[in-house]
Amino acid sequence: MKKGAGILILAGMVLIGCSSGEMEKKTLYLNTEMQSPVSRIAQITVPADTLIKENGVRHIILYSLRPTPGATFNDDLERKYTAANMYINLSPGKKSRTAQISGEINYYDTERYVNAKLVGDIVKSIPVPEKTINLTLDKPMVIELPRGMHFSVELSESPDTQQGK
Image (cartoon, rainbow, N blue to C red):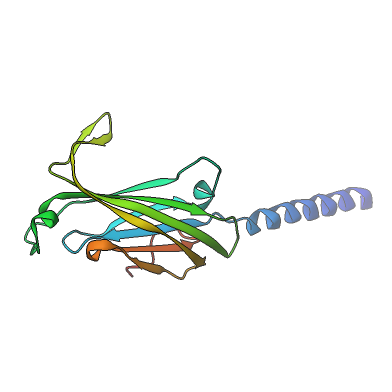
């Protein structure tokens, strides 16, 4: 009886040790938001580990920014369909990471897709210069982009954005 109880206790300790080790490894998410002066907020969340920097790899997130009906436009470019390609590379880490962010803002006459890829003539393309920022868990960072666009990023344990709340 004592031998059986000892084995059960040992097995329980092993299981507790395994489960506590699994608890420590939490998935981190990169919650992002993009908005132009005339569009709604485009929110995209991805697991942070999918954006870890690799040689020869560009991690691209595409933000679709349609003009909001009734918006007041400052110029003809704001009336165009806008797509922002953001290139994001993250360093590994548990509570904080370094992010290298760059991209381009493209303005199209029409929004058209072929085989799920955005196609068409770009009316104007504006580069977003590379910026390196330090991300800390649950502390959003806002980056001002050309033409009054706002881009915010947040490293979080939750897959939904906390930035707009």
